[in-house]
Length: 195
Image 1 (cartoon, helix red, strand yellow):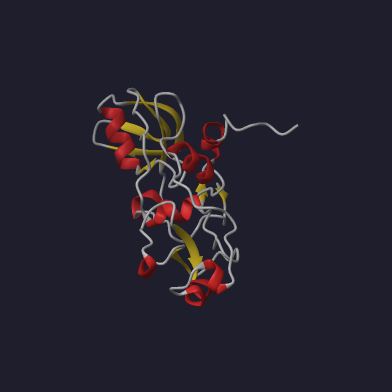
Image 2 (image 1 turned 45 degrees about the vertical axis):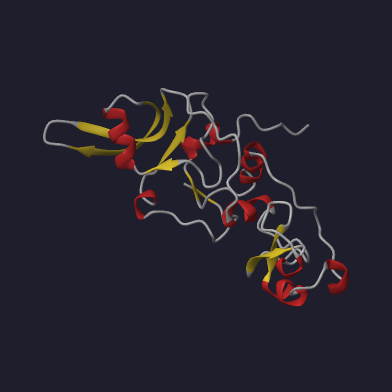
């Protein structure tokens, strides 16, 4: 099994995903999402196979048994029906951090993240994609309710409303803690090749 330590600590994994998770691909053979990576527990994958909702593309060496049947645990499944991707992006703390690549937009720090209103709420700033950025605790405390000019700070990148495709592409930069070798052909097959 391949391991990665690049995954932000904000991502929680259900206990069932730790043992034999299945990578879930849409009917176009792309993951439903990259961050968090679209995974099912082995129980969900076996159930979907039994209900004929997925095709199994790869299996683990491990099998589960019933009194009359033995089923190899799926490691990669593809949905038989296409799931349309979202047309808009929900404004959530996780998506905000993902847009900003889990990095403080003032100093570039990657820990103690919170969020900050560029134009403070006390000065009429709203809680929107265009006015909120990821910020580390020290930068957030330093800026407080001041404007960027008053605080002597600047943004690394102007905050914008991300598209779902943009967040998917950013999510590829943060592989999960667990990458099974059978998943590799399906995760990055449409990435641009280096010359």
